[in-house]
Length: 57
Image (cartoon, rainbow, N blue to C red; front, top):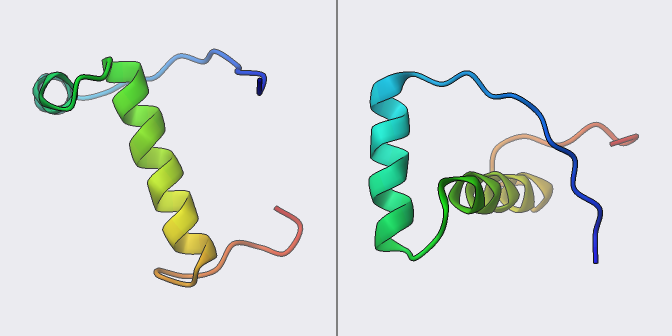
């Protein structure tokens, strides 16, 4: 299992409300939804969808 690191996230109240609703619709926690969306965006970026990651990343 991969190691996870905790960190604080400041987020707009309205954005959080929308994320909570979206996460609930997809049967995820808010944390799980954020992690899913970030991973999806990173995977798309690696494929060349919207810019490239630096080579040492």
